[in-house]
Length: 202
Length: 103
Image (cartoon, rainbow over all chains, first blue to last red; front, side, top):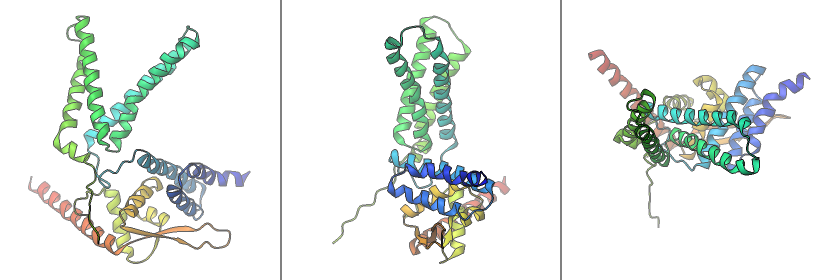
């Protein structure tokens, strides 16, 4: 029993390593090699947990093909916008999950609208990941998303002739602010793709 | 190639540690302990530095029943770039401190 507990960090880290492609598996094996040299359950567990997170970051970077400026510092504004989109996505997803038991229609008819709603709710989440990794496509998508969101809020206010309402008006201001920030030259530079060096040999 | 790079404080910490090690090979866990960085932070940095060819890696032969350990050290080019980056960051820090004192 004690051995099983002691082995838990290895099992945990191995779980992350198993699904990796060969070139990334090497880094997982490297972490596992170090884990074998660490003593103390808590230290081993912390190494395995953090290592799993690190491997996920390495995998995500490969999947998205992100070659951002090496170790470039992410501007605080971009971090905040990424967090906003991430939280936005989580809130919509949570609301959808909460609403699921209330659906009275037969599932055959409801399944496609429900799946579509989940897909739409994931969009800001994907944008958040892209912004976090300084992917320029995510910056453009974030601006488009904010524009559509601001227009939807404006449409809501003007159609219902509600006048000035703090929440939708605040959201419009926030969307305009985010678009402005993402257009700033200093912010755009952070998303600049890595410079390619071409040379002729021979 | 390194001139237009902006390195995070964590990467600079790893580079400083590797510079101090000179031509000695270092383990990931030792680097983690000495920089105070977690494995989830240090390995993505090591991956990027290796991709940039700032780092060379090798596997240490495992002792009986042991797992092989991965080791790291700066390449000659990596050492030059790392030294330049660390010095540059120290200069920026100094000028920042000076500007702050003047206020």
